[in-house]
Image 1 (tube, rainbow, N blue to C red):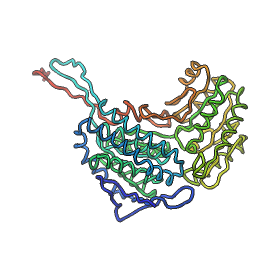
Image 2 (image 1 turned 180 degrees about the horizontal axis):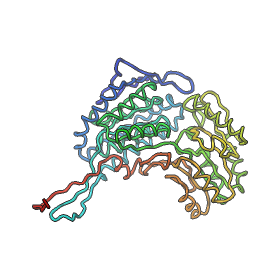
Image 3 (image 1 turned 90 degrees about the vertical axis):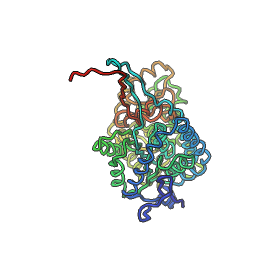
Image 4 (image 1 turned 30 degrees about the vertical axis):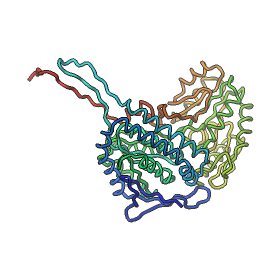
Length: 480
């Protein structure tokens, strides 16, 4: 069992009164992490530390900030075994997924370092004689960052890398389901040389989430909120931010469609569909949840995908897939399958469930009457819908409250591109899987999948204030 104390002002701290909570492995039920359970006062202390560090951190030279971010990237990779052990123990995902988290997180730190010198302003011609008008970008202040459990390191780093690059200080609110994984991020930044108070990590027991989150958002020093998680919780965070007139960046859920056109390379489409639907047990916001396939090739496509699904096993350490985050999450997959089959769907492959382990499942003939058609499953299950013409395919793809990722497979790439333009998603890949991520690409969603963009130059706008500053170079005339 590992210990995960709070990290405030670069110091390892117990929570008030020594309060703690246990994080258990989703398969064995064994306690793998004992984490400090922050009180409202502890959360306030973390924000106070970040607020005190904000002024000095904003004066750190760009080259020094870049050096620290790059050093953190190298140290994170050097500590990959520790991260891998924590992620596998806390979330029951595979070692390969844990390593992928670390590699992409390191890329994000390096990309944030590259963005430091892109925090730029402009000089705009003024209509006032003797006036120089400047538009400048300045750090916003303390950024409160929420990170989820499903990709704890890459999404934890994504939540704080660009805010730090822009000159903000951060409080990372770790997940109750992956406290050590998130705590290790703070250790990397501290040991890479970031000054005290620049990055703080707060952990809390599940029962304390409401008051701790309320206190963090309400703290006067918090100027930006970055949240990645479910749409349900994201709505709550957005409402609380609105109450305090605080800007927030939201990365929420998805229900990604993959369209397979009549001229698609079926083998490539099958590979992409299996990867997109089942990678990390389908617990990715970009996971392929809906496969929309031309009726003329549907039987061949589904037979090949079913064969591939049967060849993937979930559970043990040597399996291609791990377990879901809890038996309750797995039970919800059972409910979705049973509801669909009862209403006429065919379970073509998989669906066996034992505790938190779910074998990859494929449902055919899914209709809008079924829960799986509308609800984000966040599990290793794909739903197939057949279409007769392109207009019907686009209509099915857009028949969702979500709008994060999508994919279109077809050899006529111009036609596929024209279809991609009509799909209501912030991300669409042609002849590639719905699950893709690159550190330098602005990432975000439409509709109920969130607002704002993580990464790249658009993220600079999320974490800076745009100010107009003018200089008068001669005496001015006034009407009064």
